[in-house]
Length: 127
Length: 158
Image 1 (cartoon, chains in turn cyan, brown):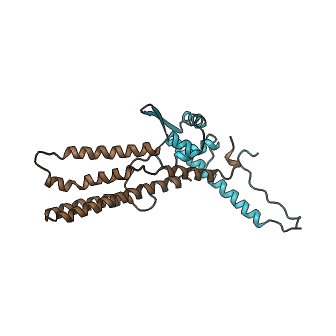
Image 2 (cartoon, rainbow over the protein chains, first blue to last red):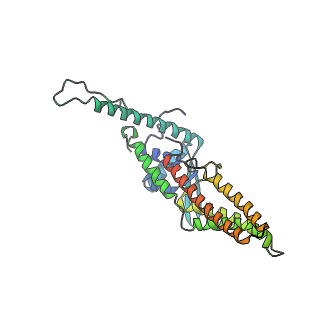
Image 3 (tube, one colour):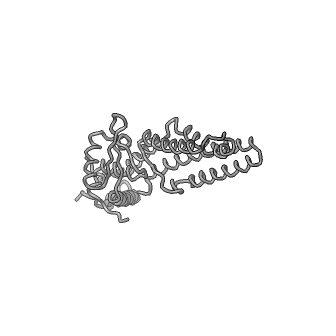
């Protein structure tokens, strides 16, 4: 698995949806996904449609009595993309925490103003 | 919509959300009694083959057992909103191989019951069956615990 960012999964709501679907369940129901992600019905509908159109998420609609039930699962392509994106995020988190540790170690003492400041590594979209 | 790369807590947020999802994987009140009835039917098989009156067939009981197993699985998915199908005997990977233990206990109990009934030790066979039902229900609880742990951990994804 290569750690690489995926612009489609990058927004936080889509990352939540994909990350939850990649957690180990085969299918997750709409309400369970909405509650776990902490989003509204409309946001989940909209973002899941984007992921479905991209071929990352498979949607199965059904009904129990009169109540509609929608189930989601990741496709193989979606799983690959999520795992790559999460690995990239983990690397990023590691780099940020490492630079924070270094910055804390290199923090100048009061009165020591001539020390150079350490700059954290550039992040995606912060050009 | 916020940009996750600027938010170092994105993975932490995802961990919290996974934890919330895992907490939903708690069986409703009827699930474990249902599992107990299912295993009781299974462990009643050695008795039925010997003590069932002539003319009463065993296959309707087997059909009821299979239907009950399917209903329990369907009901659990409906109640929790999470479907986790059967993958292999080593799933869930977290913790001990619970499903292998469930299978071994089940087979051992059936063999022991048959042996005890053959020797005329009916009470001992009933005790073995009851203990096996308790062990299988405990195994089912452990399997669900393993699934929750798996969901919380992200199922291998970072």
